[in-house]
Each structure stands twice: as C-alpha cells, then as structure tokens.
Image (cartoon, rainbow, N blue to C red; front, top):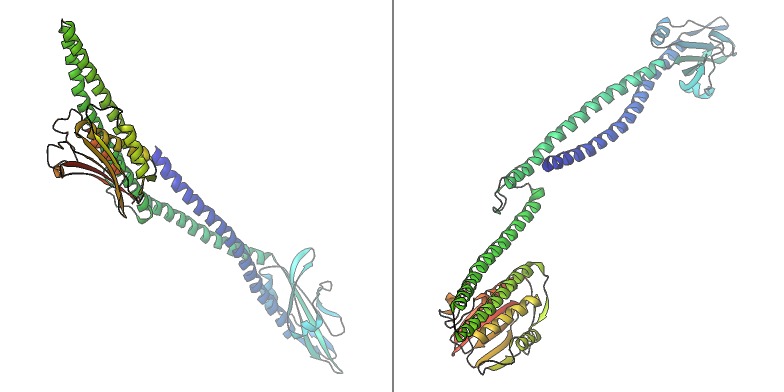
Length: 456
C-alpha cells in the first residue's frame, strides 16, 4: 500500500507539474495563435479590399466635361461573396457620382493620393473596414482628383481568424496529450528500478542484510549506496550483539551452576565448620558472578558507545593516571610495586573517554588479579599517528604465544576470571581505529592499547 501511494504520489506530482506547464503554454500559444490568425485574416481581406478599390479607380473615366465611373461588377461580386460591401466615388468637385453618399472616410487626402489607405470604421451600425484611394484625372480645362471609398463588414474576417485559431488549438491539444502520455510511459520506465529494488528488499529474510543486487540508475545510486552502508552497519551491530549474547550465556551459565552446587553442598553439610566454609565459597561465587555481570554490562556499553558517541579529544596522561589511582585497591594480598610513566609529549587521541576508562581499568584489574607478582607498570607513549597505554606485569602471562591470542583472548594459567576484560579492551581499540597487542619480553607481559590520534 505504501509503495503504491509513493509511486502514485511521484507520478501524480510529475504529471501535474507537466500538465500545469502544458496548460500554461497552451494558453500562451492560444493567445499568440488568435493574434496571428486575426492578423492573417486582416491582411488577406485587406488585399481583396484594396484590389477592389484599385479596380473601381481603373474604371473611372472623363466623358465630355464630367467624370463618370463604370463599377466593376466582378470586383464587387468577389467582395460581396464574403461580406456586405459599400462604396462611393467622389469627383474633383466633391460631388458623389456613384455609390452611397453617406459613406464617410477619415483618411488623409494626401495619403490617399500616394496609395490605398485602410482604416476601421462604422457604417449603418456595423463595424467595417474602409479602403480609400485617390486617382488624378484630366478635365478639359484642369486636372483633379477622384476619391474612391469602399467599405466591407468584418464578419468573414472574424470567422477566418476563429477557424485558424481553433485549428491551432486542436494541434496544441493533441501535442499536449501526446506529451502527457509519453511522460506517463516514461515515468513507468523510470520508476521500474525502484520497483525492482523494493521487490528485492521485501523478498528477503529478516537476517539477510546483503547489499542490494539491483543495479540502480545514476540518479539514485547515492541513495542505494547509503542503504547498503546502513545495512552493513546494521549487520555488524547485529553480529556484535549476537556474539555478546552468546558470550553472556556461556559466561553466566558456569558461575550459576557452581553457585547452585555450593548451595546443595551447604544444604547437605551438618557441621557448623563445614557450613561456614561452604558459605564462604558461596560468597566468592556470588562475588564472581557480580563481577562477571558487571563486565558483561560494561561490554554491552562499549559496543553501544562505539557508534553512538562522537569522538572528543582525550589526553592520555591524566586519563591513565586517574584510572590507575582508582583501579589499585588500598590493600593487596601481596606486595606489588606500582609505577606510572607518563609521556612528555602529552599525547591526545580522538575518542570516548568513558570507553577508554573502562578498557584501561579492565587491563589494570586483569594485571593485578591474574598477572602481577610484585611489579605493575602503566606507561604512556605516542608517535605522529598513534597514542598508546601499555600495562606491563611480571606474571606468568598467557598460556599460548602472544601472536595466537588475537582476536580471541585466553585466560592466564592461574586465572579464575572470564577473559572479558581483554575482550572489552579489544572492542574499544577497534572502535578507536587502533588495536590491542600482547608482548612477552624480559620476563614481562606487556598489553598495549593503541589508539588513533585523529579519526579516519
């Protein structure tokens, strides 16, 4: 339903705009056609009217001492075939020798002597077109000018103008309808790729987030690429969440089972001393479960903030110093030499301070609980492209070579933890265009959290 409304809306808007343009153009062309047709009709009938005046002038002659005229029947009949015709002939004395005496003309006599003068007028209550022409004649004792005035009503002119206009409008209407039909057909072809893309997306399963396979037109290629990018990011996020859920289910199942077993032992233990030992183990398991739950929540938080938070400048020296101060407890079951080595260059990276604190706190906590025997060092370093925080301890390290640990980190040989701390740090490193590396040298295990100084 939504697709149909969208397509109808697009088609309607495009066709409506084109129809408005065509109607406006048709109106303008209609006005031009009417004006052109009126001018053409006027010119055609003016030529006939002027020709009639010339033919009457050619039939004026002098007989004795008077001027006479023999009206050309053919010329009058030709003009009368289209409209009513009136004429008069005035001799040099101003006497009307033929025609209608009350037929008047406002033409300039001097202009009439140079050629036919055409004008609009009224006669017998009707609009007429008047042609005035003067002809010089030789009289026995002088020379004079004979004036010929001929008028014709304008009904035929108007009929011809309307006929030409209607024919032009008919042509304009046919062309406009053809243009609208061609537009509707072209729109169907233009929207077909959108329809194919819609069918492909609608036919997919919910977990199918592959790029769109239909080749888009150039005009919507940016939109399709943006949709592909969105689906790729959504697929990555779904993969992260699925991995997180799987990790959470796996990690929580073990301490819950152990806690349940301890409760059964506690229930079956009769002596007070054994009960106290069982209660202590229950407390330890509960504390372990609490730490694990906190780490899982921290992991989920890091995954969310990696895309949701904008990068901000973060100074590594004060960040690492504050995290180290909070991560080291006031008392430890063993003596550990804690050292902090800042970088004189005062490196600043682009990132999320909350995620970085969480990652660095997990590295320090891992080193204290599962690694360091008597020495822990947090060192800051940098170069032009990267800044890093390195946590080193003198513990036994990891059970496998460092290069085989990434990207899935293993726990230490004596560790009772979940291994999520390093996973969280690795996620933070990837979100900051960096990496988490592990080195074993000179009896020290070095875990380095590298971060890009500028986002790429």
